[in-house]
Amino acid sequence: MEQETIPFNRPCHTGRETEYVEDCIRRGKTCGNGEYTARCQRYFKDKTGSLKCMMTTSCTDALEMAAMLAGIGPGDEVIVPSYTFVSTALAFARQGADIVFADSRADSPDIDADCIEALVTPRTRAIVPVHYAGIACDMDAIMDIARRHGLLVIEDAAQGIDSFYKGRALGSIGHMGCFSFHETKNIQCGEGGMLLINDPALIERAEILWEKGTNRQKFFRGEVDKYGWVDMGSSFLPADYVCAFLWAQLEHLDEIQERRRAIWRRYDTGIADSPRFSRPSLPAYATNNAHAYYLVTRTPEDRTALIAWLKQRGIHAVFHYLSLHNSEYARRRGWSGADLPQADRYTECLVRLPLFRDLSDAEADRIIDAVNEFFASEPEKA
Ligand SMILES: *Cc1c(COP(=O)(O)O)cnc(C)c1O
Image (cartoon, rainbow, N blue to C red; front, top):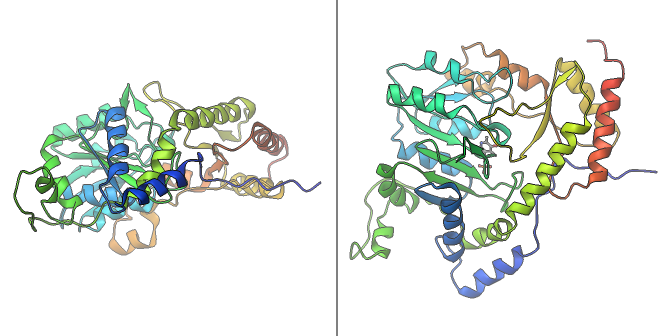
């Protein structure tokens, strides 16, 4: 019997998305900063304790806004992990900064806090930790380095909603934090993001950059009697019906997260140990939002063979990032000098298994069985 292919991801739907989008249309205000935008922002402000949460059209956009707010410009250096999505570095490169790539930890793709200090120079302005798979970086160590050198910390928490470091929400610990609501994330609205501002000194300017360099927010609050062009900026805010879609997901966040965590635990207990791979490690300071379940094989050959093995069995497992320090663009800019062995190892050996709310227990078990059969078989010769 042909088995149905299990995709890597199926974007989550909760059922009320179109109802809320229609409600937004009925209200007669579909542009940005409307009722649903306010609801989503209030939700995350309450949940994270951040001083200000601003919806953006993507996490990339939130990172770009953060780079502008940080005042990053030509001649500045920004420390970014090499094993991450392009946007983490792009947002700062776009402002004219030079990117300095840091390696990952041996036990997780998160940035290795121990290697950051050696990268700091008089030109360094910011550190951008990425909470890989929603599992927190060692934020105390990173914030301590930042404090001692007068640097800003901008958390790329694209995968980190509803996840915590020592009880503090990811995205709310650095000076700024960024979330993604792309269709591949735990909750989604197609394309969407959020900027979290945790430093009171950045709030007033954030409102201006968000609304095309105007003091429109002050005008709405009655603090000025007309609004005009006062600073740099762009149109970072999404349409309100995008936020209406997201609101339908937020209403079900706990249920979505519970289901994802159940699948994650099923993988972690069902997949038998083997010296041929390591599984995700959860530091005592971090919670798990079950954004991803991944294995790191000991050899690149095993990763390639495992992906092909699963594909033959109708299971779509995927690798992840290509180290940015080896990218064509970084080479062209002369940012690729460092030797970053962990980033390269994750580039070659990390594989992610399907994980989405609607994955059934039976499908998860089919995946677990296939993975266990693979590692019980003889490894292919390199
Ligand atoms: C998804 C992701 C982004 C980009 O998010 P968009 O909303 O698609 O712009 C950036 N950084 C990381 C680590 C991501 O996982």
